[in-house]
Length: 100
Image (cartoon, helix red, strand yellow):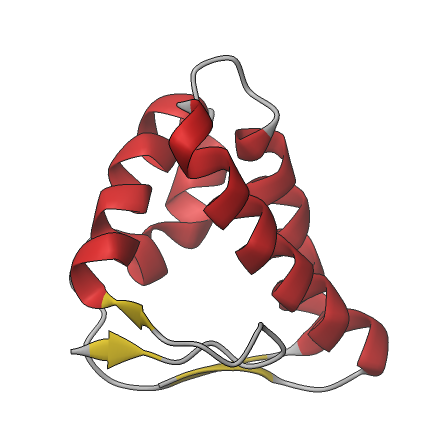
C-alpha cells in the first residue's frame, strides 16, 4: 500500500518504508517527541490523516531534529527531511497536511 503525503514531491511511499523510517525515528528522538509522531510512523497508519497546519509545523521540527541526529542512519535522514519539508510547506501555507 502506498501512502501519499501532501505537499511532498508527489510520489507515494510504501507503508513498509514509512514504518521502517519510524523505527529509526524512535531511536533518534527523545521519547516525548516520538510520542507526538508515532501514530504516523509506527506501522499502524492505514487510513487518512488531516493534520492542522500548526501541528504540521511541530512535526516538521521533530523530523528535522531526528534527521540531524547522529543516531539517524545516513540512508534514512533524507527521507526524514523530505517529509519534514512537506510538513513545513503545509504549515507555511496554512493548509492541512494530508496523509492518505
